[in-house]
Length: 315
Image (cartoon, rainbow, N blue to C red; front, side):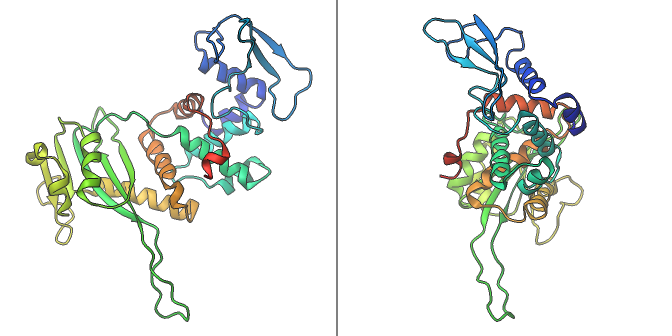
């Protein structure tokens, strides 16, 4: 679904709830999220308040009697924002290649406060986290980049002092005929072996065909000895591609380019505290870039993800 489809097919709260019910209970049997009982009754409220659904279910189990809707226990739960605005926000976020700011979401959807729009965006990002990624295969590239920091401006009356930058480590799988290629971003404290080695070991398959890196000495130690025969390096002080071969890190660096253009152009600046969520967003959107059902997939992920209270986000 694109934005036009969402505005046409999911324009009312009733349509949105029916859409969520179909995703949550695909077999058509509504079950209580508390006890799992399928004996329920439908309740239609005569008056709809800001934080209550027009239609809810009630469990008929005598020891339960829980009232619930399709949003219970999900990120949508207990939200005062209408569901159709939630869905339009999701459509905008998953379709924006370089991301879209909370300020733009607020303006486009007519959301009352920036705080609410910001909260919505972060809850969508929470659902974009891949909790169980499969290891990278084929030809894999590894590299790191740095985010943030302030450059020294020597010719101003009040020169700015250079601040520490945050390191982002990435593993990129090259595209093949059978795979679109994936990327994984990690916000790490440093580029030492003790930090990078566990990430490489967990996210690269033992059967990987080749691992390409730059000539940084840390990779000689961080990449396990079982990969030594498949590890290739390119010295960027001399060349970007080893002549006569496909040994380079240009693919993973293009992922960094997209990430930085998004952070600078769409968000302008991000809090380091929330950087991992922005990385998850760019990673998720890039890995699903050819998935025509990315909207439906994201809506379903938000049904599975646990609620994130504001106090948890701002703690």
